[in-house]
Length: 361
Ligand SMILES: Nc1nc2c(ncn2[C@@H]2O[C@H](COP(=O)(O)OP(=O)(O)OP(=O)(O)O)[C@@H](O)[C@H]2O)c(=O)[nH]1
Ligand SMILES: [Mg+2]
Ligand SMILES: [Zn+2]
Image (cartoon, rainbow, N blue to C red; front, side, top):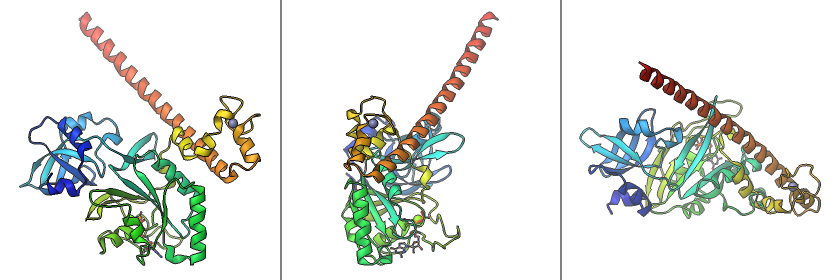
């Protein structure tokens, strides 16, 4: 295997997908930065600017099908020009996605082919336990191992820090390691490095200003990613990172920096809510009614467990909140699918009518 492929995390999984690419000139490359209409990629020729082939552009139906940072693609390179054409997006091993809500809801890939996903929070005004639970539920769907990172530990004394860590561990039921660190002081960074390694990819996600880029700087040991002062009470200095970017750390592996996510953009379905609240989900089969919503129903095993203290009421409240959000999202997705279906039907019937007209002539 060539050094490029090795250092960027190529594996048998991608090889299988790459073998399906028929073009003899095709070579693997990894997306490092998605731009508006093109992509920076790393390849055995070094960095290239790549664009989609006409055919691929035509084939990619949904935004989530388009290349995302971390994706492996098949390119035909023009190294002299520093350019390439992308002919295929190889299968993803894992992906962290968000929902983009506009007139319609679409899934967008934040970063793909991840081994770990670092869910970063700041131990300042940003600190919010329910939000960490939400991030964890979304990460549960990604196929990557989640790691909860509490950054800015330098802002707390030891005792308060220990309280925070315990609080998060309790709320998340040890579903993921919780590590506290200070990117500014470099404290605790070695615990984070434990989750990286040669050929491994880790993505940093979290709200704006939690220190994702500062952590990556700390890993790089130099100022490469732009960071900025978050000014209190103003929007200036927010969303410093504007592009997703994959960075090679060498022996430490590969990291992906992402711009701050807004809370509303977390993508979740009803099934993953159940998985994230396993202790509640496990009780549901004991409810008297099969369609029990665990709100006011008689004979509800969940309400009973809260009554006798087996389940934490705060966990239950988070569960209800997240579930209603997932339900709302599912409804929107259904509406969207129905709209799409109607549009397709209209189009088909128009095509039918036109075909009949042509026949008649
Ligand atoms: N006290 C303290 N401040 C930190 C720490 N890490 C980052 N900061 C500060 O937090 C602010 C935001 O850091 P960034 O690294 O730009 O945050 P980000 O998560 O990349 O933000 P976006 O790119 O907007 O998503 C900067 O002023 C950093 O200096 C830390 O460990 N302790
Ligand atoms: Mg940043
Ligand atoms: Zn119930």
